[in-house]
Image 1 (tube, rainbow, N blue to C red):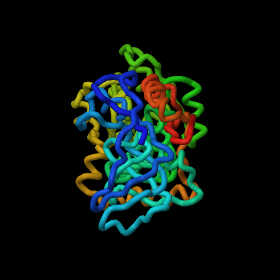
Image 2 (cartoon, one colour):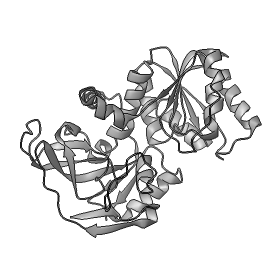
Image 3 (cartoon, rainbow, N blue to C red):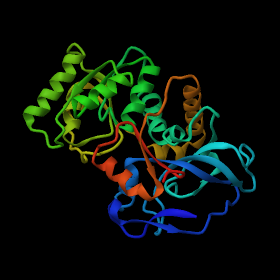
Image 4 (tube, one colour):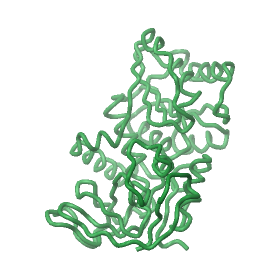
Length: 335
């Protein structure tokens, strides 16, 4: 099979397209003939050895894909060859065949296109775990979404609205902010695109958040960005607010913890991979809920970029350069 391989640590330019042996499913495993693979920020880290998991090389990046079941191992009963499915793993999806554990494979409706299916697990399941299980977001509360035009952000906007929250989109350009509003956010705040913010810019951002909430502060902050955007968002939280930290596209922030004491704020880590490992049944229920939300028209992954397998490096580079609104996917039938 054709696969994108990481043979040495480095950026997207180090990836190569090669022929590799087709995997064979063992007990409780499913082999998926990939139609589309989702592109995520974690993929840019894992190829640089900057992710918490460092796979043995060579390996193929990519943690989620949609496609057709080609073969199943002993003990698999909930899917059969020929079924349309989505699946996830830590890596391996940027290839023509993707081997996943059976409990990480889910049937999808016939009406779900493969490109949208490939964007459903990592971003939406992370957002659902964050908002439902970690923050216990309630109807009527306010939710600030940073990086609102990206895949993680769009997922949080749609799920926040589905849960009855008032959603404020934070984005780095007016165009990205308007896009986030078009995906359902109630209002938007444009913050500086330069990830190094001055104290004046940080205060202005914090004041804008407070102003949008009538001075009360925001109940829940959803932050996959980090960097200099984190502290002003923390300063703009309401009494007993919840600050969700999901990723660090702009760097790992240093947070003044005295703010948590003064406001009773909780800083909550959201590790979707750890959640799926520690409580796989709850993780399955969440993904099944997402499929129901999709069928009911409450969510729909926005796919902006379609890339051929040989263009995987370009897809990752677009993500690193923050050029993707919504989701980018690698399509196996693209040229």
